[in-house]
Length: 302
Image 1 (cartoon, rainbow, N blue to C red):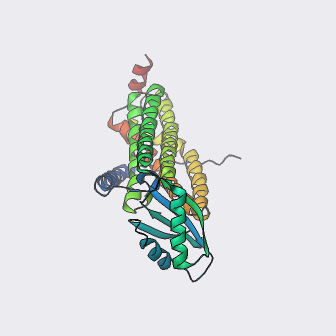
Image 2: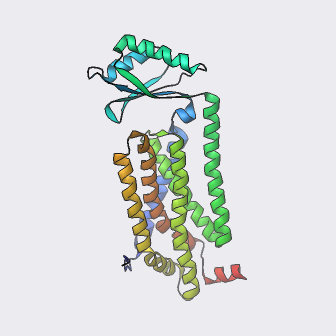
Image 3: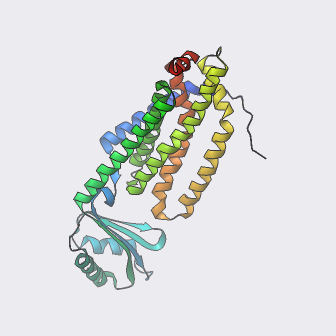
């Protein structure tokens, strides 16, 4: 049995309100990224990351932070990671002789807190490599947006292409805006999440656009407002089922996946929510603004 929602909801009744909310969110996100920026992790900023586990209950975060600050490693960040006995230490100092560098840190740490600990993971990224990773991440996002633009332009008409790209930019900007205001770390997994958001948002938009295009041929006498509203209602069951099932999986990863997957899953949760929202309240109103009509389809097909 196929789950189906029979809906005749008037989405355009609240269109203006949601458009204002979107403009405010995008504007706020833009200025946050421009003036506050993002909290780049070791992948993009360079430095050393150590995941440490202690076996002595008397060792706490203050002891660990004090010990690392004595080592003159620059700006040191220590926080709990996963379990109560796990800690994540980050600092900007990097060394080419990584083995001896880490041994020296272990020796100094042992003097301060004893040997009831072990390094579970050590990552060392130089400034040149981190710069290249950041550049590659930006290029990957821009290329994906360009590829989507070309695909939609060939698959549909230019008005649909423009609407889809604006919706994508809306989703990516707001997601990054949340990461900026919450000061969440941006690493390679977040770039992967952003690229996935681009694909997910586009998929949602294409499903509705495809139905809009069909209905433009089917109901030639109806206005674009009514046509897009009909199309959204006709695809609503598919949109809700896809979004809810995806969100359930992502929430499970966010809650039970550990600290490493928290950033990725949080970015994806934001992407799914805003991707679903933008396919209805951003992508479709743009068709109305551009005055798409059955004549638009006929002209392109000729």
